[in-house]
Image 1 (cartoon, rainbow over the protein chains, first blue to last red):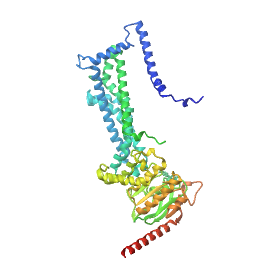
Image 2: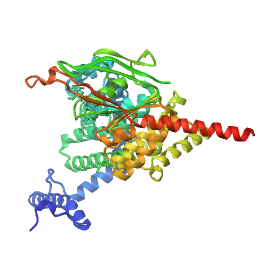
Image 3: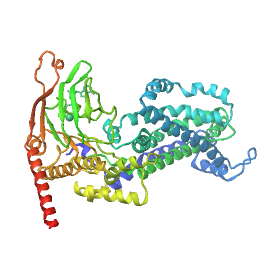
Image 4: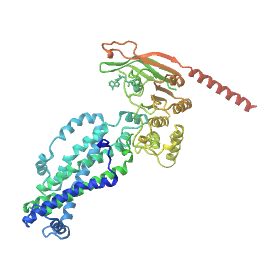
Length: 272
Length: 263
Ligand SMILES: Nc1ncnc2c1ncn2[C@@H]1O[C@H](COP(=O)(O)OP(=O)(O)OP(=O)(O)O)[C@@H](O)[C@H]1O
Ligand SMILES: [Mg+2]
């Protein structure tokens, strides 16, 4: 009998084990749904997969009368565009401010305490302020996302800059590097993989803020739709939408991970 | 020509005296080796010669001028560790310095200049025995190989002063011997001053033209931070005589050849 940590699953077992929880959840849902539908065929809380399919094909392939759009695709495009803008601006801010504050001692002394305090402000609590300042349109939603995740990314980049060994920075100077050359040639390349990782970690929060902003006011979007159909207890729309959002988030995470591995192969090699 | 003078240098961290009363005059083209027990302040001394740290008292003069307040490209260094850039390949690491010097904005050379630099870098890599690893990343190299890479990276700048902090600590005896030969050759070719820290006494006397031992002359068991370390002994190593006689031999040989060809 070996210790349990020394049993590693083989390739086939690994796939089976990985799929198992998904299958179990689906089966449990199916059983529950069947039981409820047997008692009340009009039950709305746990619809059958056939009603999911019907609702989604309706949303994806028929033009909505009020908005003249294919709702599923339109909602997806609106939400994704908000998310991408918010994440992009946050990443850019994180990169520029994080490197400058983390690398230049005077900027660091000036902004580090401020950033620490600023990142503790709960973004949803200032949402009303954003609505007042920027109106109910797109701008306030994007500002909310930036407000919510940029401080985290900035601080993460600052930490990464601070963790570059002092020896490397001194070495760069003995090789004749100026501050600009050290930023572009030593700090930036070593920070980029971490930036992508912190964007990945922020994906969940970014979706949270998109959906929260859409729930309050929007003309469309995945979050907006979910909160709209809640009034009719339309679980046949809500559950597929939640699954769809999860899938989108998963794909973005996976894409960013692949991007990291492709662009920064050196970052994956760890010293043995 | 490079002369280094340490004039009554002290280094204190808060209340703790690390080095005290360090006086040293170093001639041009000297190979100084510093030995001493662990934690005595050898790296600290090297850091001050690099301007990474400033002496809390006293002054350091290079060629009669006060030392520059920040690291410069005429003083190269190989640290005990973390000396190479993990995001660059072996070749990229060696080519980094000259590109920074030549191209202030982009930090990159192109075309013929790049090819010339690449050739120069490969020659150096061949000499340190890393030519076949040119496209690997430093994390894929062993500790000793990383030190050799750091050495090549520093040498391509042709520094006036080269500071080495236990560069061969992680090498096997064979590689170590070949690195000794290499460093000696490069030291003679480039006419630079080398300051090297080591724990290996035989290495110290083999390579150095001068060997100094750093140690605490007095200690207070109740308050070890009260007294710092200083130069406790100073040896003129025999290799200086060897070098001078070798140089004299070379000159005599030259003169003879000239005499012969004149006839
Ligand atoms: N930044 C610092 N702040 C406070 N104390 C320091 C600092 N740097 C070094 N010291 C102290 O100075 C002393 C000398 O350190 P140093 O690194 O120079 O030793 P060393 O002679 O190089 O030792 P080794 O042979 O182990 O490398 C140590 O006792 C260390 O604790
Ligand atoms: Mg040391």
